[in-house]
Length: 219
Image (cartoon, rainbow, N blue to C red):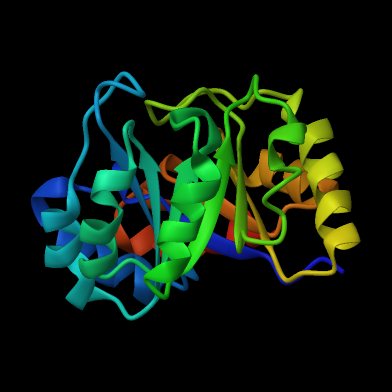
């Protein structure tokens, strides 16, 4: 059974000169999760932030810190991000040949574990980890930059993964990230997603508009 739709604004689209205030504002506006995109300039063609920034912004919200690691290698940094205050750490199945072990490491630290698939990656990569994950993230753009156009072929993938979750009998978030607008939000929720990552659509217009932005994404 699909759960209530939750909105996870990506701080990649926030004003980094006022990052703490931006997080407090998006929290107050009704965000369910705070989505933190971590990029290394290696696994993806962009560089963002590290665990020190996550630790610095943690006091500005009590909401779930949903930390998405687009980095490779990844294992050496898991504990640092956990210690910095992450509630969920999501890693990419494509980032390491041993992602089962990485998920074990995340779980051993007492936090929730997520797995992400790039647009070209098959759902079969999830087959042997459905008993471990708390969140599955479908990338509906190629990771690395905000503001990209939604890739429509991912809707079928979302539907297939929703069925896998139902079949597992487990409580697993199905998250979608990339090109999420009020229009595409309707499509992905109809396909079975229940957590929407939105950067541009959440932070457009400044703090006075955040609550309305989130309301429109919920549909």
